[in-house]
Amino acid sequence: LPPPSPPPGPVTVGDRVLCIGNPFGMQNSLSSGVVSGVHREILNARSARPIFDLLQVDCAMNPGNSGGPLLDARGRLVGVAVAIASPARAQNGGPGGFVGVGFCVPVDALRRVFEEVREVGRVRRPMLGVVFAEEIVARKMGAEHGVVVVGVRPGSGAERAGIVGISREEPGAGAVIVGDVIVEVDGNEVESVVDVLRVIHAKRVGERVQLVVERGAQRVRREMDVTLTEAPEELPKKPAAATRPGARAKL
Image (cartoon, rainbow, N blue to C red; front, side, top):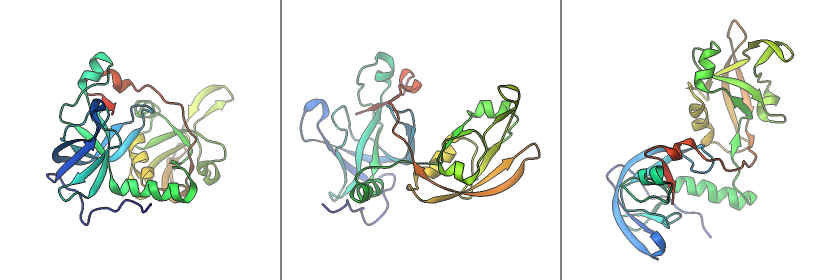
């Protein structure tokens, strides 16, 4: 099969779209609407990881629409339905219903996935190979900006590049010593883990990224090239966002 081809121009806010799916088992249902937003970010309902660069649409989508095509006014594929924002799911834990906010993966991302599956037989998620401190913890450690590296995965590109995590003055005791603080990724300033993941998201396994890190008490700046390696499969996690109003529901 040929890979999905993107429309000749970019999808923009206000474009008319059509959504086809099987909501609640009602096969081949069609709904229409417009593109409400682009480059949206939500949490994955299973892994609690962010999903980037989604299209937001207002055409009706409900459980059963997942994987259904999103078409433009001329019938060209522009995306695939993946999730909705559903306060009802947050309140009662059920499947939730549509309230006018749906999300679709754009066709450009589908094309990248298609090509990788064709080349290597599966989708591979790239990673730096580091464990980050949460932002509030990083600020308590004295890092005024950037993302603090807590540890480094053995065998990862980060380890081979020489990235350093936190340590203690004495083994198992003493004050915490901050190692590397990542302040830039490929020329983009970063202040949170999501900022880092947003850049990595657009890369493929084997590609390189350039980091700027600050190291040591004097916060000496260093430039480091890291080759992205394949992230291991992780067990699904129940995100905290699923218990709050406005939680995202998989379709």
